[in-house]
Length: 611
Image 1 (cartoon, rainbow, N blue to C red):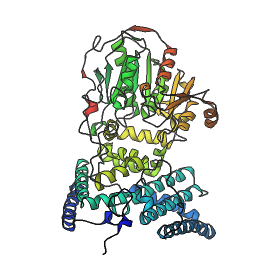
Image 2 (image 1 turned 90 degrees about the horizontal axis):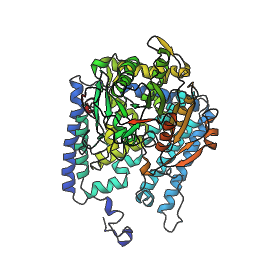
Image 3 (image 1 turned 60 degrees about the vertical axis):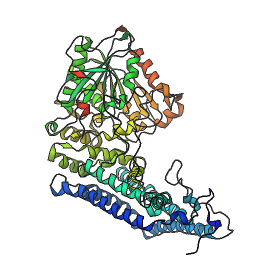
Image 4 (image 1 turned 135 degrees about the horizontal axis):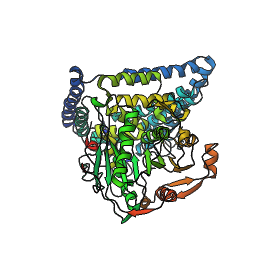
């Protein structure tokens, strides 16, 4: 091969367009490929060994079967009419021809620059490297991929006769497949990965395979994808550090009372019911982001339920147990610690759904200790539930129940994978590329440490949730049965603050809005900017995002939004004013331990149990 001339030099004076993709040291490259194969063997062994011992049983076939069934229904529409099928094929072929014509034009000397057949969506970070546009080969791959994935999405959008659930699933599965096959995910089709592999003579792949083996071993046979460097974090040391005491412990929950920092506090204590699908310290990541610490600074006597990370002993614990031994137990501890029977309560996500069901039950039973209820991104009606609804139909719920029956719980990694799949383009594939192909350790990030700290789901609890909420929507229909009673949200007549977030894929703002109409009380509906986590954990000092307030949450959601008032910054201060409008009487600050025995320091023991 002749030496490339200066015309091949890239603009920044680096190696030529050809040289940057040529191996410089074949002997070292070959040695590293052998080392990579050795590490890949360790990864395969880490995957196979627990299966050979019967410690891990794969359930991959079930979601794959569901995906195939869903795509079959989609195919029936397009292939059921030859003319319709021809039109779909013609659209794809026309897109490919445009891409091919652009590629020919790019390699033709002195030809005018051609516009891309299709451009990446705004915010798509996969194709930022200049070579995706400058190099004809990589540009062709990028455009062909974008044309194909967009065409596949349009097949779902334009398929008539699909029920809403099937369409939702088809759209979700198309997105997962599209994200997985992106050329940015593979070494030979990603210019940046290709260059790094050549420049390091394959050292990146050796490191990557080593990390892959470690992550499969850490997952005990399943891949536990690392999204951050977790080593700098320790619960109670530099995360979840707000001072407090554990004042109560049941089979399913610890109750934490936090130390006051003001001389006086609101007479009504504040009890927070977080989700058990993940751990409570999302509300206490660090002093700057902590809602708990901020609420204490505003003069709240804050109590938090820290849920157990369940195991075989908790398999039969259902929603009634979580109400009695968690929420009601928390109310008992608050009353003993403060002498107050009137409480402000907050429920977050599924913790809010439990709070709503509990309030309906307690109203019938005559327990009126909760005087106001705040819901963070909570669904009580699941008609317009988010992307998690993709995983919920009779076949899939039955499969989950079969899986849980083996141990009495659902493995935490299963829920973590499901949540990551909701945003696979952000939470899966960038880390696959960074970790296992680039061989780079991810950076420390407290939010992703929390995201990786997954929890198991007690079988009875999770089955009740999936069936009564997602599958049958019993809570809003007034047909949910708890403790031998049929509960109704209409029995909840205390003031309600209902927070949604604009970009929430788990509890969409529309779903929260629609759920507001089922309460038998005045509802203050507020929509914050951003999503399920960032929209909630948004301290005022950060001066980020915005929130909307408006009239009563009735009628059409878009009509409400069109007339809503937008406010810059955090909704936290708005909520504080709302709380004080309910009751702003203050009393001397309450210190943990003055009225009852202390069981230990916050954050307690339950939160430290990892899976």
